[in-house]
Length: 285
Image (cartoon, rainbow, N blue to C red; front, top):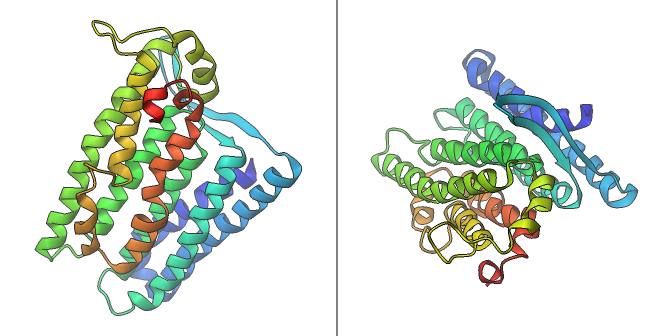
């Protein structure tokens, strides 16, 4: 558990320190702290990958209950398996390289410490998304990477084109996230739970269900609504139009967000929810 928490929280802690106190501790200490936080996560991710792939490690547990409404509990938990362990290594390795590259690229730019705080925060949000074991936490990480991408695309706050670009990215992603949220809402309404394993086991009872007042298969509708979220996040047609404008952000953002991590969140989500997608030939098509 300590290893899992170290992987997740190290970038968050370094982001908070650099974000709030970067002006006082200077550039060198700021980037050193940011890189240290991601380095700890990267080393931990490789340890987890080794344990999962070679020693058969599997973990699915709840850290704490965040909110209870009637009989429904919303929790913060972790799921460590082969899929998440591979994605952990991808996210942390790319993020570490981007952090190191940023030292030289942003050396003469204003907002140096702010930039390092943002990219560390992005790494934390992405790790929350990857390690989630329930839809609430998945949605938190999903919205978190969207928020930080908004901040990074509009990093040059005095440049009008950057302000329009980050607003465009934010609004188009909200369209995708609206579909994503509707899909999660249908899952909660018909299964009574948002924990992955419980949802997967409950879905078999819904194969013959149709969406009320329609002839549409319920599972197909859920899968397609969730995929709308992936279309926005992964810049797939027709929700792809934010991606070219997002190049208004500094170049390291292209590597971190648009090439390796955030745009793969949609693919990761579909892979994670493959037990549901496998029940719908329409959604798979």
